[in-house]
Length: 283
Ligand SMILES: Cc1ncc(COP(=O)(O)O)c(C=O)c1O
Image 1: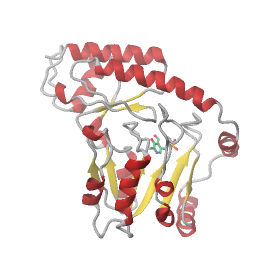
Image 2: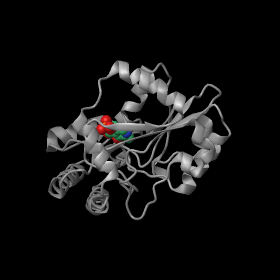
Image 3: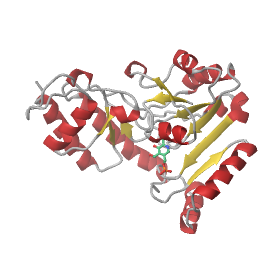
């Protein structure tokens, strides 16, 4: 199962749990954390069964344009044994006019080997209500239903009806929410890029940023900790300045860290100011 990195932390373990072998294909900062067609081609073998695709992404916020995605689906069309699981969780969280698209929409030839997964946790702020859903070929959905019904109990009725209302009701507030997210994203990206040694690309969607700390590696904090990797960076930042971030190694691409900006402007401003102070103390 090919998993582009940085990936949502759970993907490799989900693959292992299902008896598969996760094959990580690293996307780089230079391509704004998007996998290139050559990288996808190189990761595929005759044994490859799935590609896990997530755009906009957790942890980077990176979103593939129609053209960028078409280049990837062209590769998939050459490998008919490969199915694609498209995790469209951040479909509605897109900024600056970015137009969300999903693999089978860009390449209808993939429709019969596409599993689309989604949920109401993010755009409808229903994290914790435990509603996700999937669409795909009938035989696959039937097999999934069999496993699901024996391994978990059902989501509660209240959550199910709230999800129906979320999906079928007015979507008017999504642009209003996204204007707030855009403002927070811009502030966080600007403040992080102003921090010494941090380089942060501007993401297209979701509510994450994934800055590189390559220039901080090897430096020492004011408290005397040597920044060996992104994990020591995150631990020192937490212990010395009380700011919690998730280190990049957890998402399969280092040296970086992830911030979720789904929180208040005040908290984000304070956190970014402390990160700036932390970085300016590195020597
Ligand atoms: C890419 C992605 N997919 C799926 C999920 C699962 O969300 P939930 O368990 O709330 O449905 C998350 C949550 O972080 C996510 O980031």
